[in-house]
Amino acid sequence: MKKLLMIIAALSFTTLSFGQLGLGIKGGVSMSNLSTDIEDYEQAAKVGFQGGAFVRIGDKWHLQPEVYFASKAGEGTTTGDVQGQNVEYKNTITLNTVDVPILVGYKIIDPPTMNVRLQAGPVASFVMNKKFEFTANGDKIDEKNGPFGEDDFKNMNWGLQFGGGVDFLFLTVDVRYELGLNNIYDKTENAVLDGEFKNNVFFVSVGWKIL
Image 1 (cartoon, rainbow, N blue to C red):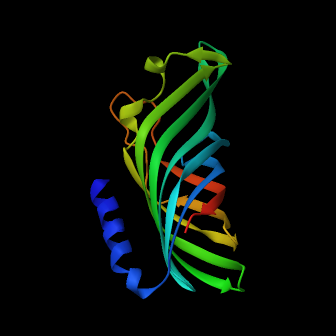
Image 2 (image 1 turned 45 degrees about the vertical axis):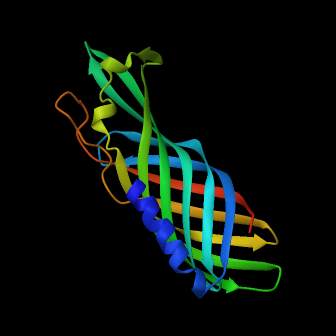
C-alpha cells in the first residue's frame, strides 16, 4: 500500500506543470452487495459509508487519485436440512477497507461556476478489518462455528469504478458504481461454502474542494 501511495504522490507532483491542481475531502454512503455463484444463496445489499480525500490534476481532461476509508457489507441467505428440519442460515460479511482509486475524467459541460464530468478507473482495496455475523433461524451462531472466517477472504482486492459528478463552486457530488474484478473469497480447508464472491458497490459522495 505504501508503494502505491508513493506512486500516486510522485505522479501528482510530476503532472503539476501540465494542468491545474485541486485538493478536497469527501464522504458518502454506499449500497454494497457480495455477488456469488453459489446456488440457492440469496443475496441482499447492505448500507455502508466512506470518507477520505482526493486530488484532481488537469482541467477538461483530468486525473483524480483518491484515498478513503470505506465500510462494505453484504448479506446472504441459504437453507438446509438439519435432522429433518428446514433451517434458514443468514450470513453478514463486513469488510472495512482503505480504497485507492485512480480515475481519468472528462468534463462534458464546463461553464465558469459549474461543470459536469464523467470518470472511470481502477481501484485497489486494502482490507483492514473483517467482521462476520451468522444466524440460524434468527438465532446467533458463534463466529467460530460459522461457514467461513477471516482467513477465507483476501486482504487486497481490485475493482473498476465508473460514474459521473457535478462541481458547483467549492462543492462536488459524485455518483459511481464499483464493479468487483476478482474473487475476494479464498476458501480454506475448514470453510463450508464453495464458490466465488465479488464485491460490487453503488455509492454517492459529497466533497469540499479546499483548493
